[in-house]
Length: 548
Ligand SMILES: Nc1ncnc2c1ncn2[C@@H]1O[C@H](COP(=O)(O)OP(=O)(O)OP(=O)(O)O)[C@@H](O)[C@H]1O
Image (spheres, rainbow, N blue to C red):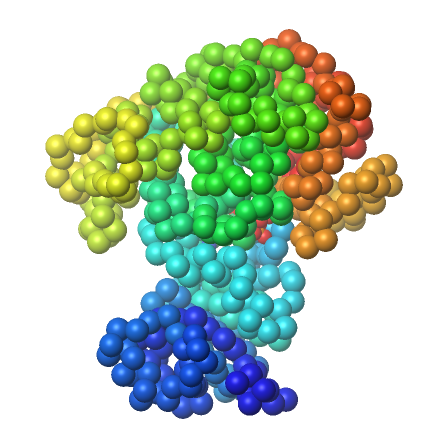
């Protein structure tokens, strides 16, 4: 089959698509050179395929021969193959300006010249020499299956001159940008509305069998009252086969089971991240700003206390496997740490940040938490109408998201009509207490250019030749704070012990709150005890940009 089409001027692509959509398109686009085949490699003509559609068979693979300069696949309704006619699809867009630069790509604001629509185009840094490669990307595989108002929409994928572009709906800014220069805290209503929406997006995603694995404020995009989850570069299918050996999530939001090398973590890692993000939204400071993986665990222990046999026996086993000894600390009162958060908020953050992933609420359960009692779900179909009334997108009739899931919180359904404003507590913006550091003081991103970074990487490699990035992945730290490989992490964590059972980690007194971070980073007290793990990282690498 492949050979038949393997001609120098042609390219063969395989697409698993919804057959009905494909047929509609073949008619509309007169794609006569497409052939369709099913799992047993039987060829179908378009007519035969029409029969299959009639009998409601879907999920065929489409092999298409086409002369390619550029091709595109359009989501979410139709996945299709468009032969290029000598000019590039990118010509349809006018690039306006760069709005983001991540590990895998730079993101540009652009204008669709035909429709006038403003979009965000992510230009991938890596080159892609075939469509097959692109189609297998996590970002494509997961996003194309998702259609939810709180998940950023992937509109189109374009490959031109071996460069891959993702065309997304455009969002005004990310949550980190909103936090960093803020002179005063967010109102509870504001952050509640955001969290409620993110949990809705997560409930949808988890229900569909995906988890994100890299939730952080930079990946939550905001436009007016709406917030959407973005960057599915690390998303995984829940049913995919562990062990997961790749790097996962930015350190400050990384769940303890990931830090401790669990081979089979799941959707609960997103819930941990949300606990950390929620706390950060209240205080405008990261809850667990670890300067290395070891320090990350230390920071977590100093806030929620050392795990015990009774609250996370699996965690103790995981630690034993990698020869890691937890520092013995008692933790602190979260309400003292997050003074602007009410009882319900503290309760939710506490349960999200449980050591044991099984004890964290699911996204659907979080939505039922009393903290969200005043938030109401608006079905997507009503959202545009609700917007007319300037209603936050989460407001409206509360609908059960996962009826099968047992409810952890027995919240009552408020009796409100759709489109009415939620009865949120009218909380005015809190003003930051003088002791509360400004977010601007936290240097989340290294203020160093690529050259500096490369210099640092080189010196790190010199100092720690053992810490090699995993072969398959980006692995080493990079501009947006991606983590090293998990196997790397194991190495680092185990480097903290001398011989079996002898840890360099000495028990530390509980540290109520790390002092405010200054530009250039901050050394936590715990770092003094981390020996080599600490030596690795220059002070400035405590910023979120550095993975570890
Ligand atoms: N749809 C969008 N609309 C507006 N800005 C966006 C959009 N998508 C991404 N951005 C901006 O670009 C930044 C980087 O995007 P993204 O996280 O997708 O790239 P990445 O290379 O995967 O980054 P990371 O290093 O976090 O993995 C985001 O933090 C955001 O500020």
